[in-house]
Image (cartoon, rainbow, N blue to C red; front, side):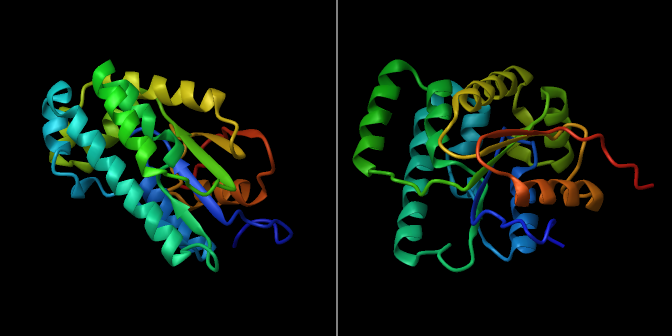
Length: 222
């Protein structure tokens, strides 16, 4: 079921949030429900990422540039393949947010060089019909990161995750390029619990212009 039959689900949905919050898993489930294609970030393709988790200062610039080029290629694929013209698209990253990580990890000289590269790539992304921003406190993110047991991520510090979460909060406080649904993902589990997922799916399908908040009590389905 896709919620209210009268509601028109958005055709380009972006799910965002800090590492560990569950955005990629939610994207896959949303794409299946909405009959859309999915567009996923590919951290396994970045050979610098594991080094970054061990030595953020030393590997930040190479890691950031690799993700920048990866997203540029994905955008080019969208332009050439018109991927979401017929089916719609759900993505697990927002192109406009790319600089957030650069500002967080690069020094001023690296950031200036990064900006030069970014400007030459002409990354003009389609504007989402809806951005779903998943929020959760750092202890919840740490617990979920440990639970999925990806070796490279186990060295992430609570301090880094806090700075990342704060940067996301600041970014989306000012974000006004698309309708925005801010979801408290700490208490609900739309990936593994069908009741929570259906509530969120209904809200996504009925979201209108502007900024909205989704903070339901978790369903007790035991």
